[in-house]
Amino acid sequence: MDKALYTGMSGAMRSMQAQAIHAHNLANATTTGFRADLAQAVAMQVSGDGLDTRVLTRAAGAGTDFSQGVLQETGNGLDLAIKGEGWIAVQAADGREAYTRAGNLEINPFGELLTGNGLPVLGNSGPVSLPPFEQMEIGLDGIISVQELGQGAEVMATLDRIKLVNPANADLEKGADGLFYRRDGLIEPAAAEVRVVTGYLEGSNVNIVDAMVEMISLTRNYEMNITLMQTLQENSEVSAQLLQVQ
Amino acid sequence: MHAALYISKTGLSAQDNRLTTISNNLANVATNGFKRDRVAFEDLLYQIQRQPGASSTQDTELPSGLQLGTGVRTVGTQKIFTQGALQTTTEALDVAINGRGFFEIQMPDGTSAYTRDGQFQLSADGELVTTLGLLLEPGINIPENASTVTIGTDGVITAVVSGTGTVNIGTLNLVDFINPSGLEALGGNLYAETISSGNPQQNTPGQNGMGTLVQGALENSNVDVVEELVDMITTQRAYEMNSRVISTADQMLQFITQNL
Image 1 (cartoon, chains in turn blue, yellow):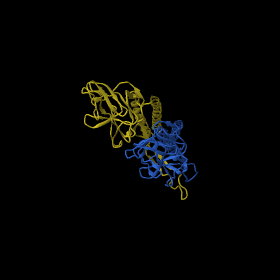
Image 2 (spheres, rainbow over the protein chains, first blue to last red; image 1 turned 60 degrees about the vertical axis):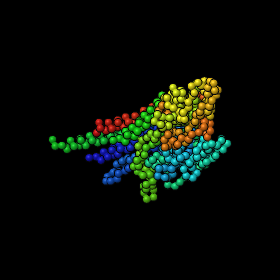
Image 3 (cartoon, rainbow over the protein chains, first blue to last red; image 1 turned 135 degrees about the vertical axis):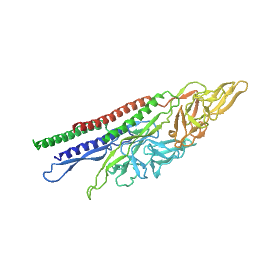
C-alpha cells in the first residue's frame, strides 16, 4: 500500500490544528487586550529508502501577533489602555511577574489594585495598595494620585506608580494562562516612556476578516487532503482487484 | 473530534452572556438609580503541545512552541458605578445623590440593603419608605400635620408643622463602600454588602467624599443607549463568526465521513 496516505493524513491533521488556533482567536474577538495567536506549518521530510518524496507537515505555533487593538472609550476611571507599545506588570497566580494589555482594573476591600481577573497590579515596589480615598486618578505615565478620605482636593497625594514595561516582543512569550512572560524568566525593568490613557480599554487585536479567510482556505486544504486519501484508497482497491484470481 | 467545535462553543456562550447583560441594561434604561453591568472576558488556558524554548538541537531552541488555546471565559460582570443624569421632578420626597454613596434600607429580615434610588414615599404611619415599602435606616418619621418637608444637601430634614413652626425631624445618612462594584445586586434597585465590597462606612452627605443630596430630583439610569446598541452589534457579529466556525468544523467532519 502507498504510504502517501500518511502524507495526506498529516496535512489534514495540520489543517485541523490550525483551525483550532483560528477558532480560539475568533472566540476571543471581544476579549479585552487579547493578543491573537499565529499558526504556521513546518515541513517534515521522511528520509528512507529510495527517493526522498515523502514530506509530511506539522502544525507549529508561530508566536503571537503583537499588533495594537482598537481603543474603546468606556468613561470608567479604573479602565486604562496603553498607547502604543508597552505592558502593565501584574503578579501571576504563581507569584511570577507577568505582563498584560488588559487594563480593566478593580479595587478590592483591602485597597489593592487588581486586574479584571483578580491579579494584583504591580507598582514601584510590589503590588499597589491604596488607602481609603475620595478620588483617584491615574496619570499618563501610570502615576497614581489619591485624595485621601476626609481631605480636600488641595492635598492630592502621589502614591505609587503602576509598573509599565516595554520589553522587545521577541523576549516575550504567552504562558498557559494567557499572560505574557519574559522568555528568560528575568524581571523587566520599568520603562518611563510607556503612556496610558484612562477611560479607555484596548479591544482584542484579532483580525476577524483574516481569520475567516484563513478558515475557508484551511477547510479547502483539508478537503484536498481527504480527497488525496480517497484517491489512494481507490488506487489500492484497484490494485487489489488486479491481483484477484478470476 | 475537532477541537475548534468546543473552542467556538465557549465563544458562543460568552457572547450569549454578553447579550443577556446588554438586554438587561437596555431593559433598565429608565430605571431610577440603575447602574449598568459590563461583562469581562478572559482567554482560557492554553494547552502546550510543544514547549516554547525547548531545545531543537544542542545549540538552538524552538522560538515558539505549539500552544493551542481553548477558547474564552466570562470572568464576571462588573457594575459600573458612574453617575446617572439627575432629573428634576419637584416632588418633595424625591432625593438624588450627587456623587458617591447609597441610602441604607432596612430589609424585612432585619438586614441592611443599599440603594441609589431615592424615590421615597410615606407609609400609613408617616414613615419614609421606598417604592417597595421598605423602611429607611435610620427611620424618618414625618409628623402628621407637617406641611412642607425640606431635605438639605447634608441630609437634614426639616418640616413646617402647623402650630409649632419649623422642626428638625431627622437626618438622611449615606453609606459608602471601598469597592462598590463588589456589591451584590439583589434586584429591586437594592444592593447587599459582600466580602469584596468591604464594610459600609456611614457618613454625612457632603463629607468625607460622600455625594450631596438633591431634593426634588431623581438619578436616572446610567445606561448609555448608543453604547449598548453598538455593543449589541459587535456581540451579534462575534456570535455569527463563532457559529460559522462551528459549521465549518462540522463540514470538515462531514467531508471526511462521507468521502473516506
